[in-house]
Image 1 (tube, helix red, strand yellow):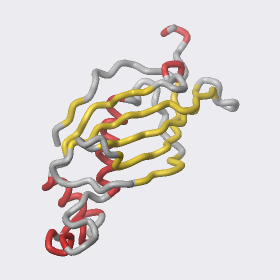
Image 2 (tube, rainbow, N blue to C red):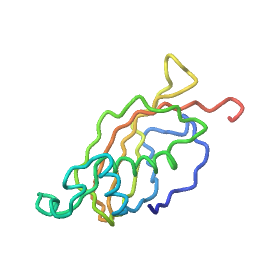
Image 3 (tube, one colour):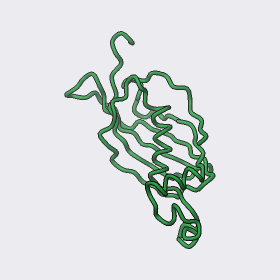
Image 4 (cartoon, helix red, strand yellow):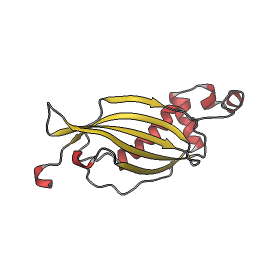
Length: 159
């Protein structure tokens, strides 16, 4: 798996400004990794069998959506979340795969902060809702997701 990501720096709740857009870099879709993932976790014919996949409406092998999500998550964790402040996620409201991902594609990940608010019950952290868009080398959207993340507020000594 080859990838490129911007340099990481500590990011706190206050740094996730609604409307801000974050380009997280790119990741190449390796055909062997794609097959290995599908064979282990999503063994549907259009993910693991080239001959069977050729007979489907996809016309060939495609990545499991879960593999696409895993590649996105790598960039999301490395270039958007910060180990100093990330407190996990209570979930993802939606996840869609409008276009198939194929071996050799290069995926880019862009995140837009949609909403951010300080937690009422835990004021040392905030709740961030984002839109993730994953595009291929042709600019086609291949995945979208709307996660919620919990993020620590900037400590007083770091202000």
